Length: 288
Ligand code: NAP
View (cartoon, rainbow, N blue to C red):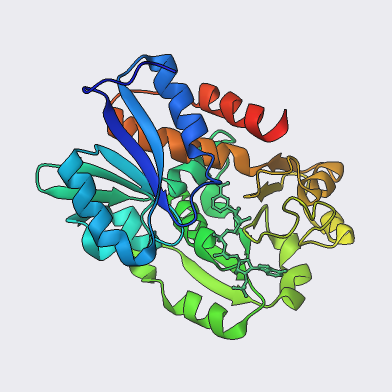
């Protein structure tokens, strides 16, 4: 690692807990390659200390930071400006210093859509299915709407939460409509859909044999369909293995993780960064 001096600029991530975050690994790998005088540090910040932490960051000259659980929503009223994308998601994961205070955005959206954009599909004809209706599903909804999908189906297990999820969107601002469905309805949705996105933790390490989708459901998808799992460990998940066996195109969660981090670093450094270097650094930690 490069030598830290009095001139080294500070970046980091706030969360609680934050010690398992992979962001320092990928951010510092690319900072090192670029040869810029920055360092990215994990900061454990308890929920009740968020305002104090922001004041402290301003005092010591932190240039920018990521926010993770439990701060992604709570930080919004403490910022002087928030991008339209982050307002729509209702969560901020990237913050940077401006002349008028801290500004926040949500780079999970660009992280999610980047691998899809590379597939070059006619998005406004595609009716995606999202499995799960938690925090990550919100970034996925905004990403799919930004891609041009006009109608999005969201599948969840809790009727009340699903109802609140649907109600939480300003459809004219989102420019896409949302319907919510129980898991029983999933088999009826798949033949009409060319994209299914898993935003539940089902299949995550160490429960790697689990999948949110019954294996016999895959044959109902068209061959053009895409299966996207936000989970990055294992890679591929059982969900993606089953989809691939049926001939679907698959995308795992590693690219989303990398591209959201790359987008944040580009905001802080104001220069292009290499997602490949960040991806390699992550793979070394996760899989070797
Ligand atoms: P979250 O807010 O807790 O949401 C999880 C959703 O999954 C909720 O709707 C939850 O339903 C549902 N769920 C959980 N267990 C379930 C089960 N056994 N059966 C059916 N539904 C279930 O979590 P999140 O922040 O959205 O994260 C979700 C996943 O995405 C995690 O695996 C996370 O690692 C991954 N993720 C990846 C990236 C990336 O960059 N690749 C970014 C963000 C998140 P209830 O609300 O009813 O509990």
